[in-house]
Every structure is written in structure tokens, then in C-alpha cells.
Image (cartoon, rainbow, N blue to C red):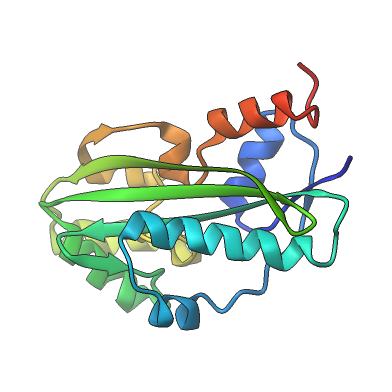
Length: 194
């Protein structure tokens, strides 16, 4: 029984590797922007719908594998943030989040063939400290292009730890994948040794 993570996210790959989970990593090739534009519903439903869409895209090609799709949504006030597409956009994200709390909602979906076997959604709350323009510039210089793959323009596992006053929630959820519940499901399904 093969296991595939429908993602090329470096953070998700590292979580699997660090947990000793062997899997193939394949891009889902889902147009997230178009999907989001046509979606109506709460952020939790959006994250889960995107996770399912990613899993389904890969499961259609690899019908016998257990395919894991994951997605993360950042919500601050009534706004849902996308990944920044440039350093300027990342700076704008950080300015908008500075001194405010926000939620990271991470969803995971496991499929085999056309069947959804398991889903899970989890949220974490993060309170960002007030950031100076000087700190934002130094932070972006230190993190470089890596933050363009992160919905909030930060990596908590890197310099991003310096952005926050308080974090409530599961660390793996913040990184973009509720890993512990996923591992529990994979053990119960016989994909991982118990």
C-alpha cells in the first residue's frame, strides 16, 4: 500500500521525513486561485475543500495509493490571505498582521481511488507583535524566497518565531498539516506500523 503526499511543500515533506514516514511527493496541480474564486463558505470548509481537491487530483492517477491532500488558510478579521507572490506582497502581509491576532486553519484529507477515507480540520491562533519597518526588512532579507511559499509570509520554524507574542495550538497545524491525527489514522488504516 503506497502513500503519496499530494504536495511539494518543503515544510510538509520535512514533517513526513522527521516523523519517519516514507511517502512519494507529487504536486496536485490544482488552480487554487480559481478554486477560491468560485468557493463560498467558511474558511474551515475552504481549507478542507482544497485539501480534498488536491488529494483527488493525485488519487485519480494513483488509484491504489493512499493519497494525502492538505491545505492551510490564514484568516485575520474577515480577510483570507493568500501566499505572497513577491517580497513586496510579503511585506504587506506582515504589515497587515502586525499587532493583530489571526487564525491558521489546516485541513487534511486522505483518499484512495475516488473514496474519501478520512478528513480532519484544526485551527491555531497566533498573536503577532507590533513589527517595525526595520524589523520587517531584516526579516525578509534573512528568510528570502522561502517565505513566498507560506500563507502568512512567515515560517514559525525559522525567523518567524520572532514575530509572535503568543501562539495557541498545535505546532504541526501551524506548519500546515495536523500531523498527529494523520499519523493516528494511517496507523489505524494499516498504512503505518502500529
